[in-house]
Length: 290
Image 1 (cartoon, one colour):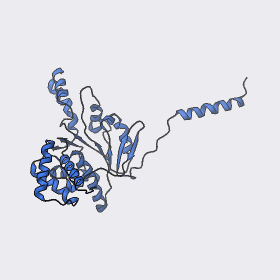
Image 2 (image 1 turned 90 degrees about the vertical axis):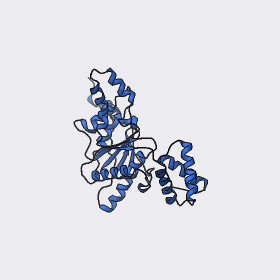
Image 3 (image 1 turned 180 degrees about the horizontal axis):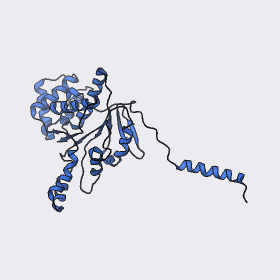
Image 4 (image 1 turned 60 degrees about the vertical axis):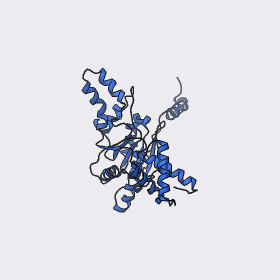
């Protein structure tokens, strides 16, 4: 019979091997260390963002109603009152993502003056939506209110991850944590391609039920904000706001003429086109802008 003492080294090696194979418990991140994070998967980690790429709140021209609506919704949320998930939809370059980042900064500047908690902005990429439940388990442990932000959210045919998103937003047993609000931007009002909705409608026995199933995801967002290309006067107001902000010295008529030509070459007028023009103008005039 083998002496039990001889088994001790073997058992110790087995125990050591099992410890190496077992997953190490992950420590929960301290979300007070930064105001913004990006969610990364494989492995799951919240990566702190030291400086958010944003535009000053007051420089958002032509979208005053959308700006104030999202600001008020966010303020109610951080102050502990009921607030809605928000869907910002519309044309490209019209300020959808810019307004989310600017409102985040505005709310945190007001928090310092009004003695309420700062809000943490957490960006999740479209392709990481299936990992959303794991992220929410982390966020709900934080004492800070969190805005979960997904830019350019949309779904195409053969993509059923929207069903899990629906459950997380409102429909599941747990729903979303009380300290988390979901903001998303999209070029599509109902988040799904028209041909995707039409295909399911044509193949369904009850077409109204198929359509309702597909638009029910956008219905999970209580606040809808539409964004559209701006008119020329609003475009000029955007340009002039940037010129004043960065101290660019240029004749007003010359500024308008150059801005008009720039928008014609781009085929549109939007906040993104205005910012690109200002970058070109400042570069040509050897002016640094932050």
